[in-house]
Image 1 (cartoon, protein in one colour):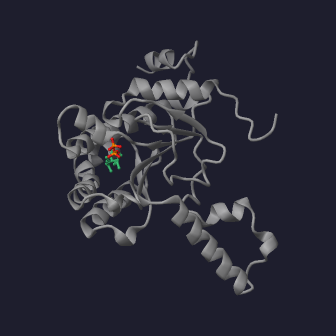
Image 2 (tube, helix red, strand yellow):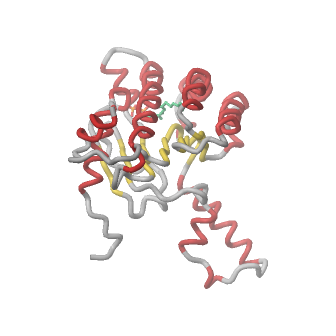
Amino acid sequence: MIKRLWAKLGKATLPSADSEAFDNVPRHVAIIMDGNGRWAKNRGLPRMAGHHSGMKTVKRITMAAERIGVKYLTLYAFSTENWKRPRAEVDFLMKLPEQFLEVELKDLMANNVQVRMMGYREDLPPHTLKAVEEAIERTAKNTGLVLNFALNYGSRKEMLEAIKEIAIDVKRGELAPEAIDDRLMHSRLLTSDIPDPDLLIRTSGELRLSNFMLWQLAYSELWFTDVYWPEFTEEHFHEAIQEYRRRARRYGGL
Ligand code: FPP
């Protein structure tokens, strides 16, 4: 299986150890899962059918990422702007984490996946939060892939909150303005304990960031596809990884 996967990824020889020995696989992949609604519309289905199908893709890509040794997978499941959608759709989206975890938690445990959440907990309905917190707690000791759900997440809010915190510390005399640097900012973001994404994937043909990890994506490689999220397969994912492996990252240097 691993051999076949590696061949697909274009590596001539198979590493001797397990999948973690694969070289130059992105450590952190972030995905803007887009196109559920259009996928459904094209089939004459309600938008909710698209989201339901998108949930299956979440499982498929989580397992694909785990198999090739990605360490962090961050999925944009609900933005701070998505509350503007019709009530019925918001309610449906808020039920997806519990539906997903109810069915998949056992498998995630078996695969050593650790569930986390990045976003503002206070606005989430209690049933959504309960399911997510339960999954976080039950998988906390797992040491494999970190599956990070961006739920009620917005990058500008995240940065503004960090700036407010920093300003308060300066005002109190606990922090010198000269001490404000990249590292300090990183330590005040919701991603303080994970590295920045190496690769960002967005499905559905839209070419924008939609308020997603604006600070953290500063030097990430970007990969876009026209494929809608419900039909995004392991092969598409490998295509993105393969492209990432070919790119030279210079971080502003030569
Ligand atoms: C964007 O597509 C998708 C979302 C706003 C929701 C993403 C949610 C999932 C893929 C399921 C999440 C699953 C779990 C387990 C949390 P869109 O609705 O904007 O599509 P459109 O642009 O075609 O209308």
